[in-house]
Figure (cartoon, rainbow, N blue to C red):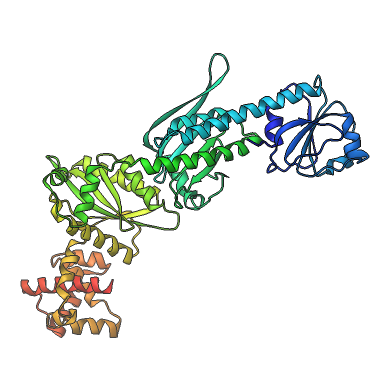
Length: 513
């Protein structure tokens, strides 16, 4: 394994006084060191260790021309001029080492350490089809001395590794496995940047505002985003060499993750699979029907989500988040690029049901989503009708620019029923005698006789309440009503006429919206 001078300098004894000179390009990597001899032929990408006396004829008198792709470690005290800081070759000065042979052996040990680590990673990767991601993650954690975390494409944590010192002060890593979701607070922070960071295909420092920085690498083993691995500096601050070491590890881990994906097939819940079948209108066997049967005293409502603005949580994350944070209450799936699902509530519509809806509403609001929800139901075979209800409620409010988070079909059921009446016959042809003339009179005179009639009928012919709603005197309302009856021939004393008017006025509002 080739190393750069950052790794070597940071792994040498802390007792050494080290000075860096020349180029500081972290992308330059070198092979194991050689002891420098004056007449040697330089090898590319090689480190040469030499006593300080060699520095003069190499870089002062320039008796020998050095290629740019090598590096030097000089041992001994030397007072050099600032002009030498511009040399192209990477150089380390160690002014207090016993001799250059001891430094040579120290650097060889550093290469031994990283070669052994690299071989362990390679052996684990090539071991078998059944890749041990936990073991590989521990290898990375122990080398970087900081915890690591692996999430899947739905922001579910697959593995967590931790680093701790044993009694002999040797570091050791331990890993926990098992799907769990990020906390709601962290999910909110992730939502702000994940759509941008998810597209990054090179390692990066995350811009998520947390107590410690995280160095991340998005996993694209098959050309699509499959998850993310991140190392956090919570145990100790990042060193310059950590980024190079992490980059090397990320390459191995992505290959291991690809093998993991090929041989590991996560099980979806039987409820989710049955729900998809129901939405697809596929026949349900007895097991699926049993799975999709509510518990005693329980009913369901369907929901459909729609994003509010550009700051919404990505859909695949949101569907998973709802399942994780409201288990056994919400089943959410991404279906034809739309989030749909079922909420379990009590049939009695008590305070507990209200609490469930409030929690659901809170999550939607934080993630910048709105939802349409259906009327309660219990027969899964009718699910598509209730999905249509949720869709109708959602689109009625988006058309009218409402600012709430959850919209219930129950609040729009009457207008839905009425809207079905005008599919074959246009609305004006359904008006009772005199209503069309009243509408046209309002338009021409810019008056409010139609509004007065509507509020009067809604208030069950109570002139006092109508006057209060219109901020008018009661006598003014009575005068208007008399004109509506006499001038436009509308008989308000007939109950059938009043019902006909109420229906048509409701339809008029729907058509105007």
